[in-house]
Image 1 (tube, rainbow, N blue to C red):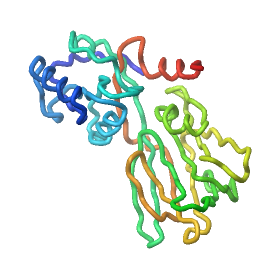
Image 2 (image 1 turned 180 degrees about the vertical axis):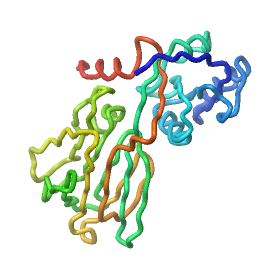
Image 3 (image 1 turned 90 degrees about the vertical axis):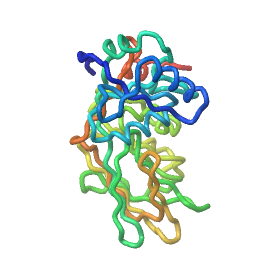
Image 4 (image 1 turned 135 degrees about the vertical axis):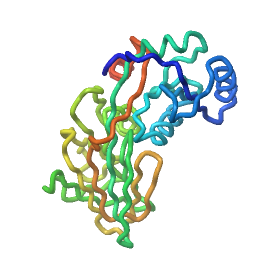
Length: 260
């Protein structure tokens, strides 16, 4: 995490379809201007966590810092909404650097699909029967057969999202780790997953893919009928998320661990 040092004078605004977000965009653009993203010093996203993920994906390779303001529901990745002193808030903001996950999925037809994911890569059963997965780490089989509804690999940034709902551990932002979390495991019933170094390569092999079809999703992008999915951190891509001082992502993740 680092503190922003540049002057933020040229801002691009994006907003979700929520009426409050669209109204906020109009007022903020009138007050501060609205640059094209390619010409902006920062992008301000008005909405919820879904919009933040969409904005990060839209600018995955642009290295433009993104500052979210909550006009949605949960807003874990967002700052408090305010139209006052925006330039000063951007200048004083802390920046969290995030590396996405690279997903390579092969489907039953032999086609290979590659996508990046900011939060997690997930595998899901497609029908009423549970999925059967074999899990390897760095080429070594660690779980010969997991019978489950699915499994996911999460980044620290995504560890408080679906991973937490699936009873996975919360990771500090600077932890050099990934979480591997089962979704409703049936056998082995008590397996809670694993913490892996962030340079690990995780491979899921789908057992009985025709009888028990499985889909894979990198954030919001889904591939149906996969037979193998490889997941690893993509260190060549850096994303920059901006947070108000005292409310950065490290602090939010820490607070989340003490909620009851």
